[in-house]
Amino acid sequence: MENLKILYLSQEITPFLPESPISMRSRMLPQYMHEKGHEIRVFMPRYGCINERRHQLHEVIRLSGMNLVINDSDHPLIIKVASIPQIRMQVYFIDNDEYFKRKAVVADADGKFFADNDERALFFCKGALETVKKLGWKPDIVHCHGWMTSLAPMLIRKVFNEDPHFENSKIIYSPYSVPGNIKFDASFTKKLMFEDELEKSDVEILEDPSMDNLHRAALKFSDAVVKGSPDLEKNLVKAIDKSGLEVMEYCADEDYAPKYAEFYQMVFESATSLA
Image (cartoon, rainbow, N blue to C red; front, side, top):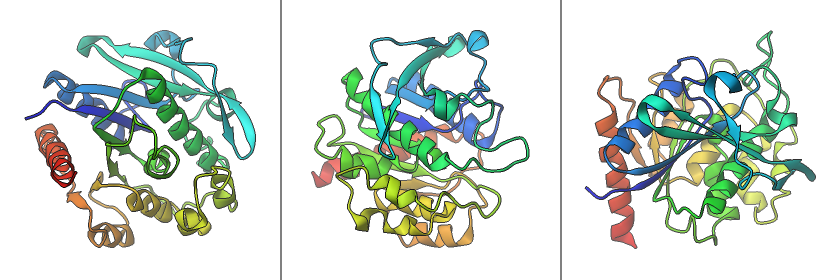
């Protein structure tokens, strides 16, 4: 089995956030792949509820300082890093006071979805990809966990498509179940169109800015998909099954990591054979 360079983007990772299906898989998979000799990089948002002192987050000055344009406005990008000592694994945090200072993850104390979650997702994905470029690192596999990462496939394929850091990357998207009929801001597509490289046909599915359509947009630009939950919305399951992508079904086994490793290798080797 060839050693791979694997980029993990996730909206939640434990121990920085409470344990959940997505935070646990996003924590254990990189550890397993790291221990098997693969080279990994891990990114998540630096939500305001993360205790920086407890987890010893610190800013990486050489990676910070860039401004990202979101909805025609400049937003400073701050990069922080922390280690999970017992496994010697680093996690990079994408930070910005406007988007991630609030003391919550994606909803307020009453459970109301933040109105700017579309911009937060775009900032996180752009920030992570720009940071990978600064690191001078070329991932073989980009594995995106959760809706907060769902714009990364589109950005890689359309905005970063000529960048040598991502030209050979294969993208795997893992959607997880999200309760409720969640809608994003009605001007989502207009905000995306500030990315000059994007065309109307790339974002038209988000003219109805639902959570289901956000997942579908990610599928459109991915090479493979892993069903992150056993209870995904039925229409999304149908879209996955009809997508023509390589599909890994939801794995409930405790010993799931080796199955993911086999799937990574299959996606990588399939892509290599077609090159």
